[in-house]
Amino acid sequence: MEHYQLLKYAHLIPAVLLLAGLVAHAFMLWKAHRGGDATVLTRKLRVTRLYSLPALGLLAVSLPISGWWLVHTVGLSLGASWLLYSAILFALLMLFGLLLHGRLGAWQTAVGNGAVPTKLLRFVLAYAVLVFVLLLAIFALMGAKPA
Image 1 (cartoon, rainbow, N blue to C red):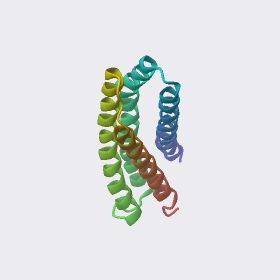
Image 2 (spheres, rainbow, N blue to C red):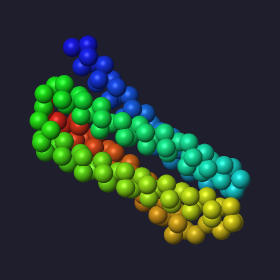
Image 3 (tube, one colour):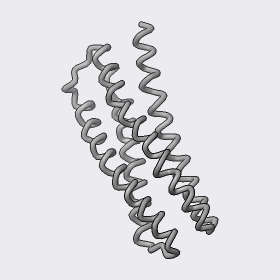
């Protein structure tokens, strides 16, 4: 039973860190954008793209691995619909996460050049909201699984 509890925490902690990291970075970038200082925003975008998003990506990739191990330990079927739906949502999460990474790079370049089109900011916001909603949907499916 101790093994199961350890696996549960190994799955729960990265999930909480992933959600908290996304919220913290969204707030940090919003605050830097509202501040109006282009050098601060460029630096925060660079740090977010080079360090934070890859770290959050590693946390996200660890979730299916620890989740599979947890499901395998409990003995649940890997063909369960809640698990299959969450796998599809996870693939979409990774796709939109990569698109968000690209849009943040375009935003960083535009800030460095001095002109940020509003269409670019709308794409960044749309991808960020999609990533957040997909993550919450996966969490909801994990919470709704059979006991």
